[in-house]
Length: 218
Image (cartoon, rainbow, N blue to C red; front, side, top):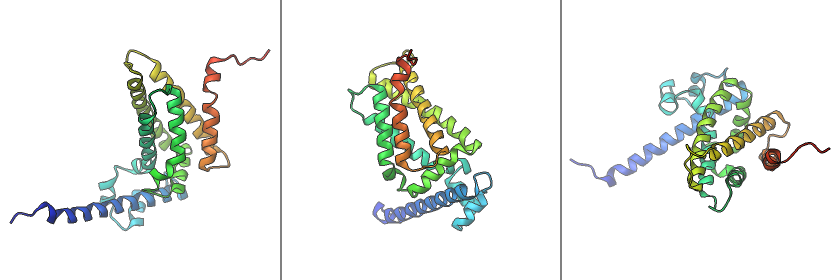
């Protein structure tokens, strides 16, 4: 006897919701453990045990600790890339990047809180700078993201990214500023979103003057 789509879809929907709840529970448990006892000291077994599932179940959802540690960062990065694509066509490339990242900090809760509390995401973000293995992985991902952003910028401007160096140069400068502000924010005393937004704004505002103007005053 054949089953119809109407008969199977409720069950399929229930399974998907259960999978989503398990994924989010593993993610939250992992980030809590990473930020309280350290990334290196936390094992996959501990994460699985915190959610009362097997190690095998953990690996159905995540390839390993690195993937789960950087998961919410990936959510924020995807939101930023969408914001870049949606900026008005008349904006200059660096202004596009500037407005997209500040908009990202203003709306990050909407993206991240669908999977974990925003406060937990910010603690995990801070953890990256103090964990060499995570920082190395994050920098690898950043290089890939910057290439994707450069191609989006080139497309917006009607340029061939492989023939015109400007999109990659602009994104490299922007990426450098993001890494500096992220490091300074993580080392500072105020780890709030307003603090990193203010720091990001201050540094991005200096990109033009720093690159185009003389620094000596005499």
